Length: 372
Ligand code: SF4
Image 1 (cartoon, rainbow, N blue to C red):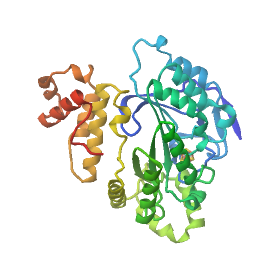
Image 2 (tube, helix red, strand yellow):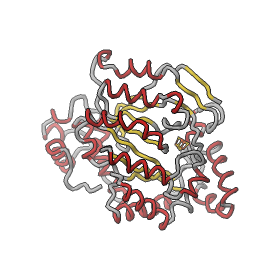
Image 3 (cartoon, rainbow, N blue to C red):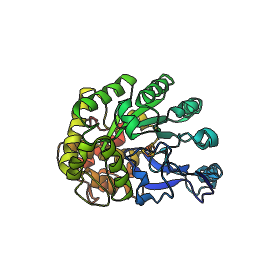
Image 4 (tube, rainbow, N blue to C red):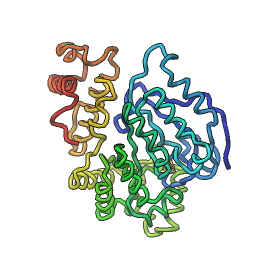
């Protein structure tokens, strides 16, 4: 069922830049998703999407009119910090089939061209090819990045768990087309499905296919199963197709936390396997700086680099101060480049070593010892 609604606001603004997606701004043009992935956490109670998540789709019919006001710099007292505007992820896929009729994603890109904003799209649909012309225009002005989410490269597995999304082979073909059009692309390998798509052979194949298609990076995550609707829906589907796996899931999802994370040891070994394979195929594990260096502020560049450093060190189980330092920097009232060395060293959470790293990022746009 299609449910047309008028929204009050569209753009969700975050004070601190998100270091996974390189964005301060998210937006959902729809709520609910016809792709109906069985593991989608958008259907969990946390997001309060009404109705049957995969079949009842809310369309924000006035989204473009509101977004035009929200993006217009003439209506702002101070300029919005530049970052990617994130289109997709969360509770919908902006390029699901209904977009062919409503064209809200395309009209959003037209607004981003009008106001010269960079865009990062996350989708599982080849419909994004329709908008290559606008993505190229955005690329000329600032930067367009298109990421695809995958649970594996297998079309057969996808047909079970992602019943109405474009097949992985089709997503790879679109990645190739986007690359030929000069648009950067990424793979969000999230979530891997325990004991099915997290197996070494399957994950190796997924990253190999991504590398061959030309992805610029891959970002990894394991699957969460939030209690009640999401977990029940997923487990019903799992038991129908892989009945032998139920008891293994009971073990790794024994933790009943509201976030539904898998057991720490399982997560750690899955991340380590991903790390090995990404290293084998020389695929960066975070969005690499050449993609965003020119479009974000120096303060955000420092925050993102410190968070990426924290992520890489966590792989090695090494405690470090960089995430906390990134948080402290996000709270500063002035741009990072206006602080002297001695002022920086007086900020709680920034010692001499972190101070030196910050100074290098501000001066050169990167930290030379960080290999993603
Ligand atoms: S494409 Fe994304 S938003 Fe849509 S059902 Fe799948 S995981 Fe959920």
